[in-house]
Length: 97
Image (cartoon, rainbow, N blue to C red):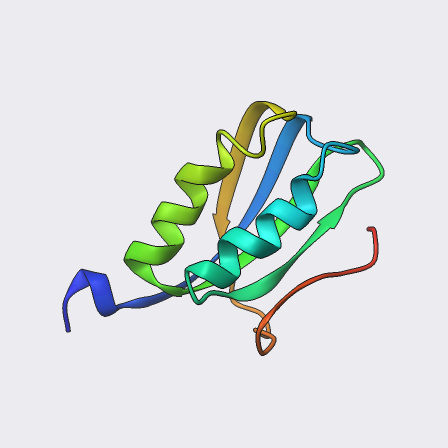
């Protein structure tokens, strides 16, 4: 199996000016375009948290896109860690954490 077809799951915490700038809706659009599973939500500390699951190359590309985000966002950082929990079907915006 090549690295491109290896399936991975990554939990990301995006910090900066990422709330009230359409970051979550943008994330849903971008993740769905890549065929990823997972979710995105606001956190009480002002960050956005997202789970991306799918082929290694698609997840890696999505994480790279998160460093930019939508036009109005000002991303300060993207922290990434492996995720071993349940993976939902599809990709959705969920309730705030």
